[in-house]
Length: 143
Image (cartoon, rainbow, N blue to C red; front, side, top):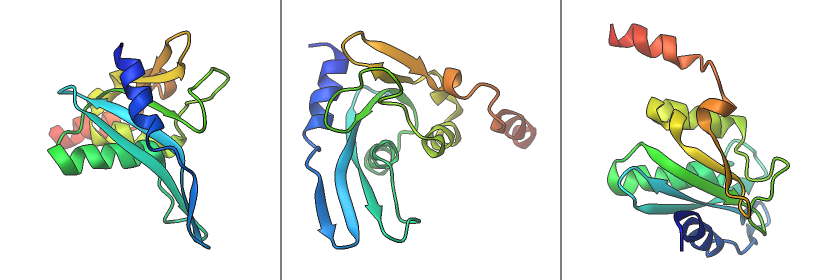
C-alpha cells in the first residue's frame, strides 16, 4: 500500500454526509494529509447557513495537525467527495486553502495535492499559486 492509498483510506473513513442540524451540513468533503513527520491527519468539510463558519476539509485536517502536534508543514494531501480525485479539477483545493497552506508555512509550496488518484497525478502548491504575494512580505518581516 503506497502513501496515497493510505491517505485515501483514512479520508474515506470520514465520508458520511450528514445534517448536523437544520443549519449545518458536514462530512460531504473529506481529506487526509501527511505531515512532515509522516503522521496522517484527517478533516471534513462543515458548512452552515451563515457562511462565515464554513471550513474546508483541507483546513480542518491542517488544524487537526497543528492542534495535535504543533506541525505546520504538509507533504501530501488528498481531498474528495464520494470518490477519489479523477482529474478535471476534482481534488483541487479552493483559493482559501491555497492561501492558508502558504501562510501556515511557506515550505508548504512543495506539498503535493492529489488530482488524479488512479494515475497518481499530483500538483504542488507552488504550481497552483505561483508568485505568492506573501514571499516579499515575509522577507521584509525577517529583515
